[in-house]
Amino acid sequence: MSHIILPKKWNLPAKEITPEHVFNNRRHFLKLMGFTTAGIAGALFAPPAFAQSGLSRLAERLVAEKQNAALPYYKNLKRNPEYTIRRPMTDEPVALKYNNYYEFSPEKDDVWKHLDQFEPHPWQIEITGHIKHPGKYAIEDFIKQFSIEERTYRHRCVETWAMVVPWNGFEMMDLLKKVQPTSKAKFIKFTTFQNPEAAPGQKIYNTLPWPYTEGLTMDEAQNELAFMATGIYGHTLPKQHGAPIRLVLPWKYGFKSIKAIVKIEFTDKRPTTFWNTLIPKEYDFVANVNPDVPHPRWSQRREKMIGTGEVYATQKYNGYGDFVANLYA
Ligand SMILES: Nc1nc2c(c(=O)[nH]1)N[C@H]1C(S)=C(S)[C@@H](COP(=O)(O)O)O[C@H]1N2
Ligand SMILES: [Mo]
Image (tube, rainbow, N blue to C red; front, side, top):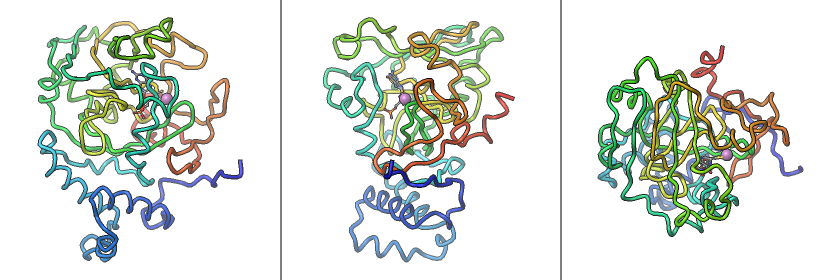
């Protein structure tokens, strides 16, 4: 365990972040921007207007602008500063090659190799159950109804790996406003595609309770953190991250953030879910990040960032207690 770095607090003000963190962050953004070394030197002497908020913020803004310019689909992509994370961003190539996606492979570093047969376009999504406006949409028509923004969130897998990535998409609440749940709606059930011909995991491990399902209470769904991601790192979702649309719930263990959704159903009963059906003692329905409750087979006290291997102390609700603790009071 000698490689473990002492846990660092991520809620420090920007000026207290260690230089390595700032440097890594900066390098990441500059790389995204296509800056050369000369460009880095130039950017270091940021104009005074930006000095206060720090170089990485400037870089983030520039990246956002570059993305806006480059992507017609995301013309209005705006970073929501509410959710800026003071931790180094995970490098995109790292996140692309380290995934949990059992439809394709049980090996995290292997998922990206098994995606060829899977085609997330065309795609239909059905919104159904106890709502005033049910419907079935082509995914483009569905997403068009919402304005897309970017949010950087922490992600904490129940297996203790973690990352920080910029998702883009829309708040679950925006969907609720459109479909208008009736008073009978108490939970939401989400369902992933089923296609063993395209997803080797579904074919090989055919006794698992496919399709992958997940669920939320209506209260949780209305929380401002609950997010429908349509993209990541300024573009649409690659297959391994859950194209064309997935859920993102940063205060819960990663398995709640279901990928490649084909159906969203408003129910009066708590839905059955994939992991909870498979191993209920290890994966509960609520699954909030909590360092004080160990997984039956390992501690949840620490987490390790993919890519850098940095180890941090796990925080209750993954550090999002200010947003969600009241839901569980
Ligand atoms: N359909 C589906 N969604 C899924 C999973 C899965 O196996 N199938 N794995 C979950 C788990 S355990 C995690 S940690 C995250 C990983 O997301 P990422 O690969 O985009 O980092 O996806 C979640 N969503
Ligand atoms: Mo996970």
